[in-house]
Length: 223
Image 1 (tube, one colour):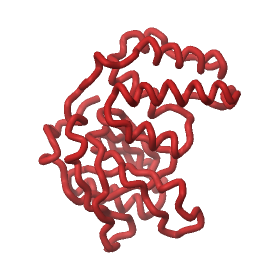
Image 2 (cartoon, helix red, strand yellow):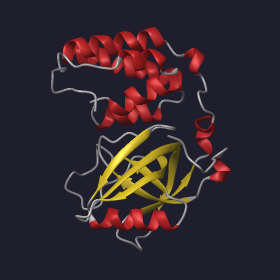
Image 3 (cartoon, rainbow, N blue to C red):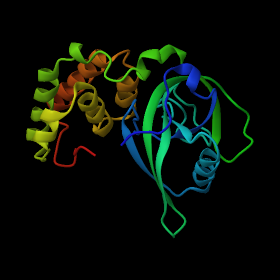
């Protein structure tokens, strides 16, 4: 699945975007994220996005913020995605799919004028996100696949190994990061990795730590 819109660099991206704070949700450039939207404020957010550039920022609430806060503090880095699929369910929900564009850094959160939150953001620090498959040759693919095999064996789950073998390094690493069952802090570390090589290394390390802890079970499935 691709996008009709072309984002060649930070200058093609909006400086103000609605943000969707969702713990454990990781979107990465060119990754696909299906979302089931049902809260009124996020239905309103999707309506507003569809009127304009269809861009929404996925971001996690800071794991160290007050869990009882009505407006939890956000991490400083998220990833913008464009709505490429949209459907109404007939029972008040929207089913949408986002394709990741690039990561952004939050410059400031704007005063609320809608039900949803908006931020002024900068894409400048993540210029390489706009280059498809950048740094693929530096990825330890064998290490990534080994970590995946070890996880699959421990969790007793099935994966499409043919699809794994055929996937380019960027698609493989980013898809595994997005589907991984790790917590908020770990997902944020994967998001903020400076490049694809480092993201793959973080993914391998997190998987090895989880296996060593014995935290992998049949419930730890790839989403």
